Image 1 (cartoon, each protein chain N blue to C red):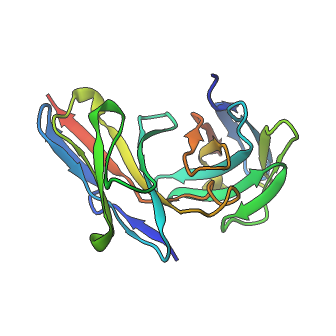
Image 2 (tube, each protein chain N blue to C red; image 1 turned 45 degrees about the vertical axis):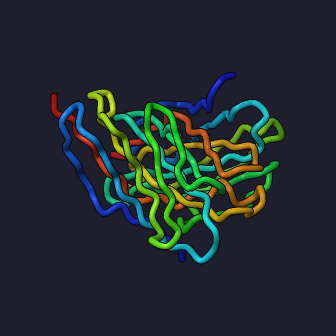
Length: 112
Length: 118
């Protein structure tokens, strides 16, 4: 069974640009969550999608958005990038019936 | 608001020594508890989980953890550490029986970096 796949793995952007990150969950998993990981703030919850609906949202500005498609794949978008957005963005999927999350390897975003 | 505290930012042990990583949580409801491990540049891998029942849970790679409700703790242990255990370890909590819509929102501790000396 394939794990959670995130693309791209690494990317470099400049301030003011926007970025889209993609996540393919484990087959059969309907819930996808996104986390931002930085050395200073640790792991912070961004949002969760379940059956194409955003069900939870963390404390991030509106520049951070996401969506989920009918096949459970998810994307997150960050507009008007700031230096502080440099981070590892992790996607996790779960069946929606338990609290066990399965994480992808992350997308490492560097903003210059 | 719920919170998870891992008091030790960095722990160094010798290979073959025993290990205990501490985790304390503050939660208003019955929690589900997890330990994850992260190697540099990688995602998080689940080591073990506690949902209910036996308070001593076994995980992968020889790890175990004990849930102590009275102390609000969920400490991770391993009797003999291997050099390959060097990584960062995260304790996490989510509200139990929250329904499918809330299980994706874990609250993580700040992590404990484990260094293993040969």
